[in-house]
Image 1 (cartoon, rainbow, N blue to C red):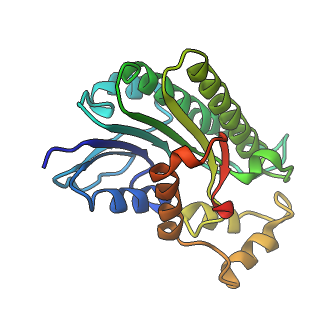
Image 2: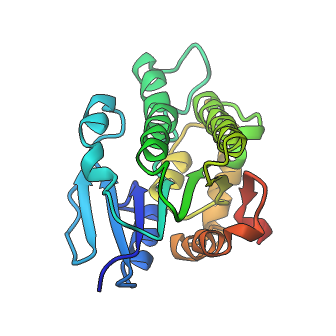
Length: 243
């Protein structure tokens, strides 16, 4: 069966990204391109690309593989990969971690958005970008300056890109989507932080012990609901806990 929908998913080897890829490849109409630092087993409608999102040059060298030509009735970029960074107060953050968090959480999504909108500008079909954001983008929590700021930047560049598309009727639909609190390796990293660097530590540890974390699969279903019914969601900023 010829694939009519193409999905590009970053961070596809684990967590929400893997859950999304696993859901999407169940349908023969979908072609899925997964991006991750680790090897991913190829499948008939799944291609895994081993790329480090912190390596901007490598991303730009591989755009032909990341964004196939089609034809497609729907193309969708899901910028899912993210990094919590070095959980520490300013003055104690590893300088390299400051650089890395913006490369992964801001620069990589910006580069991929730009290339996606260039590649598919003239496509006569559904053109969606889902940027996985965070409620931290609008909250002040100690130890998370890099993560919160990077997600705030992601929200703003998503809104600007949507505005630009609307100005010239280019037909793109973009979302910055807060996924809630998911049981992923990122949460493990948060729970292993020191209380001196993160005063909300016990709160986040309780999410795990009390069973309050959502599964990657349940959140993936909500992301796919947004994609399937995107015309019902006119606002750029969305939160899975509200639908």
